[in-house]
Length: 359
Ligand SMILES: [Zn+2]
Image (tube, rainbow, N blue to C red; front, top):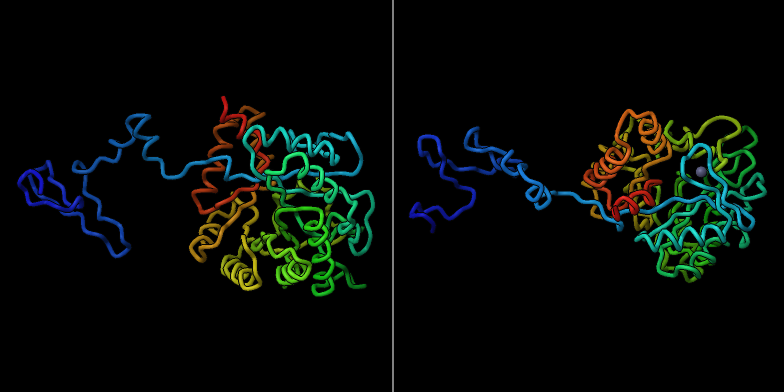
């Protein structure tokens, strides 16, 4: 009891106007009915920096971010990627060097993409135990054991035609014959010491095929992060140059999702969970925040979002042109992705974020 009013519930308040006692009743949606102005003034809680800091609902931390890097064969290679400002093609030793610095800055996780020196029709170089990804995993894990190393699993970087699966003579991407090749590549990453594998091909049944292959080889502890909801997006442009993985003919709309679909996103997520995915992913992130939210509400499983190369490039270009404050906009873009429901964000901004935190 307080003030002799008999009010116990914090939902009841003494109103200023006319001394009326108003009750905030929960609505059907579980929200409280708002008190009208001037009884309620949301700005009260925005007045000072300390109030804003105390009451912020969503915060970023280094634990939220996974940094995508591109590894190439060779030694001592650190070549700038023209389409992705500040990013490089790195040989395994240079990747280990970057990993050391990233971890020292507070980074927690990398995801590796590979550019091999040879490609073939079936993408078999992707499973080469001496391929750039497998070498980089070994070098990074021995240099920085407590940094999580995930790997992208797909054929497009390793096929001569640049598609994410093997092709029929008429150019169609064949689903089932691709599964074994993906499983073989994922297994080679686990054997090299990867902490997590992340299939990005969008073939049906690939999570199950990879899970089976890992389990039967004793890697039941290696989680599968599935690119469950991956759209056929125009925002991948800069990445394709970085990964040299653009298809030589046709496009990827036969396996990646149509940007207009969200019910299909829920179906993809449910299927991947049924196949044994440990983490789901939505890609791209920024233009698909509603999809992220939908999957967040659908499942309690961990959810990742990939802020793709085109999203990053737009921020950089607008910042470089002086059209917006790059740092503020970059941080806001990450916060928005987390607020929409992502537990983990794959982003090229990760090293800059760590640097900005220290300043
Ligand atoms: Zn691919």
